[in-house]
Length: 115
Image (cartoon, rainbow, N blue to C red; front, side):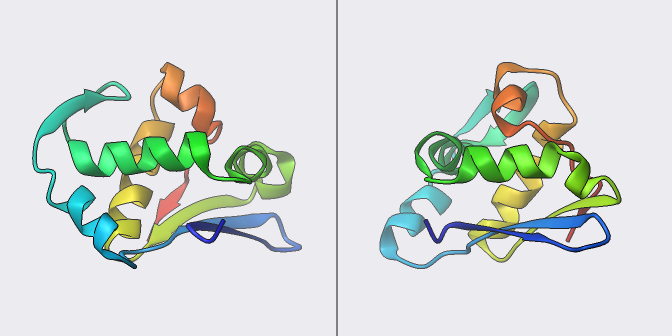
């Protein structure tokens, strides 16, 4: 799946990157301006949280990438990043990773940095 990518360095630094807006279907997520409580956070943009939920549950490889991010392979730093829609998803992943919820259990890692 090309919506996320993982980079692991030989010195235990890792980065997960979320893809930005690439087609009209993403625009509908971006314009879903309702808010919801999500991952222990209040008033979260419903379109963005829904898009991240979709990636976490439907994206081939997400679980294994999240497992690597949570492992000792990434113990120097864990970075999440993205552009446009991907930046929103990275921000939510970083915020959610700091919580202790059922969604956090799917995410599996805490980000040290957000770019």
